Image 1 (cartoon, rainbow, N blue to C red):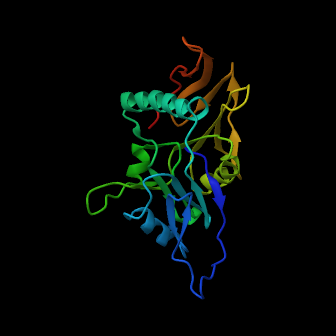
Image 2: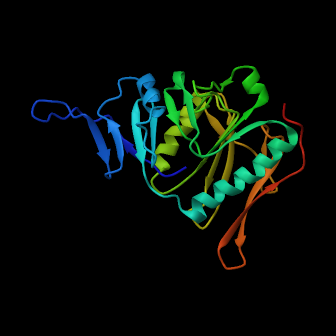
Length: 245
């Protein structure tokens, strides 16, 4: 996911005695001056007024805005590798649906409307209505509403405060596994967090690998120099632990 900058609810500025019509960020992203509710924010996200460039999130009433480009090595390449590997597993096992960039996750009770780097929803979650994929009048599905089985966030320099809050919000939204990757430092960090009594907890590792109960496999994220010296990442998949239902 592209990095985000926190935008707290601003006081309503007065221009010649009138409130502003909208806020404009970097000359590109235009937002209404006020979103009174999550429902009004959702309607705007689904309208033609939503910006073609950048991302705008609702996290517990705060508006987060980003129009930054994602770095290839520490962000884009990671998302591509994880999506490629997991989508292959999901299709082979007929497990459910993978969702990539620009698909919005909404959970009204958790006061959340964001776009994770990746999401997975099992067929079982859809059938039990933990996840709702409701088409609009044009038969387009633009929101994933409910509790995904898995979400991924890849850290970037300005996304850390947002990601720290998202961990709490994803737990409140009933997410089963929270995958977290940080490739910005010398040491690559890859964690699969599972639900504990009051929050997510890091899953145990065995020989450097971490288990995913959602996908029934163990995983390790490996980095090595590629043929032209640019780092290459491989999501290594361990043996089948069980078949996810």
